[in-house]
Amino acid sequence: PAPRGRRLLAMKVKFDAKADYYMRLGLTETATLNDIKRAYRRLALKTHPDVNKASDAAEQFKRVCEAYKVLSDADARKQ
Image 1 (cartoon, helix red, strand yellow):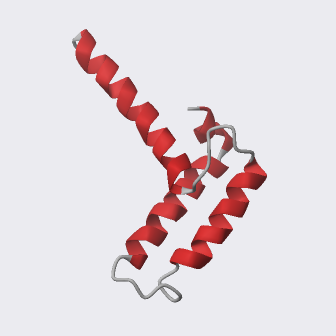
Image 2 (cartoon, one colour):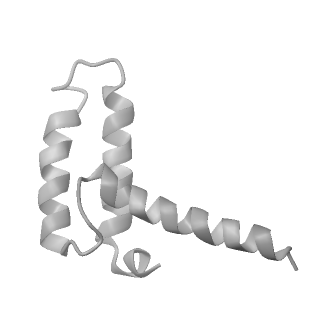
């Protein structure tokens, strides 16, 4: 078994990663599925590489898509 400190650190990382998905979409953890969809559509249009000419637009778009993919899945949201 892992030492107690490592286990707590791993749990904290999982929690922070979940919170990060909400932050990427500009939402709180109480957001509904409709809120998630609305935020994704807004950010997808704003960050899509065909629209946004910034050098990191593709990376921003990938992060928004990843957050939506996780948060739109009910099973993944529970974790």
